[in-house]
Length: 399
Image (cartoon, rainbow, N blue to C red; front, top):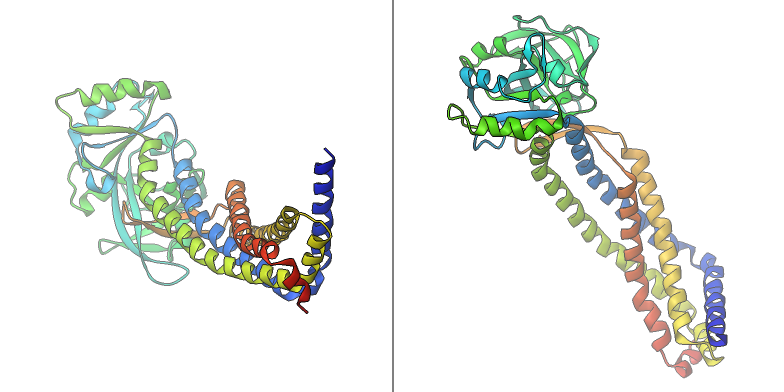
């Protein structure tokens, strides 16, 4: 017990001495702190893109909602359903119903070209032809400005994300679709979901423009309850008249975001690792400088009977402290600048733009600070070992 107390006392003494001399190394310490802060800020900012996209996809899904596409289709762009298919799907068991029948919306999905508001470059913007029950299927839908389009007319409403990211979508403006001018009459939101990046129009109006006849690409529908899905799915997949793939809406949006999420996460991690190597070298330089400037002091302590381990741990504590400060600064900067910042990127699954908000979440901030601590540990380990491996006699002779 006495030995442990003595060891802890030595550790406290050496650590206190290290902290008291930090002011003598303000330049190198600041360089290490802000180098690590830069790495953490970049890593958190890039990964918050993936978190924002994931959050947008999750907000798009309801546990009671399903989407039905043609079997073998990975996205709406690849699917096609005949009018008879849509009728049979709407008769499936387990669907919620109102006075007009099943709460389902047969829909079309096309891409039109608009300009990005921020850069003026071309962007693939999703236009969706919806059925009369589209708002009831997506229960978070509401018009926030203007009005709903008139059924049977070539009027459009736009999502709040689309209006913010793309030019020419103000109420009263007109967009060019198939060489016709279609007026924008309203702006809608759906609880932050993916549909806020889209432009909506009556599917019956969109069909002849793109020569789709009586065909659609997907049916969105609401179940009586989430537990009704298996009954609904079994009925459709066992019907010999159909060749379809029913999916829970949550599963569909997860599959849509998977490729983009992995790409951005992989890229962000790669960038962080590359920059992290630079930060490690900065920390190494700082800690080697700190150790070199105290060579005689460390040797004196060892000559007086101080153990090697308190010296090693004290150097690591100093390195970890600098890294922690840098991590907190970097994480805080990323949160202040990027959290909630809206942007758009290309969804490689649908080849259309996705508007989203950067999501600098608490778990992401924690990951950034932990990464900073790993950098600090790597940067302090070798100088700490060097501090105790140098012979006491030669260290005492250094100036």
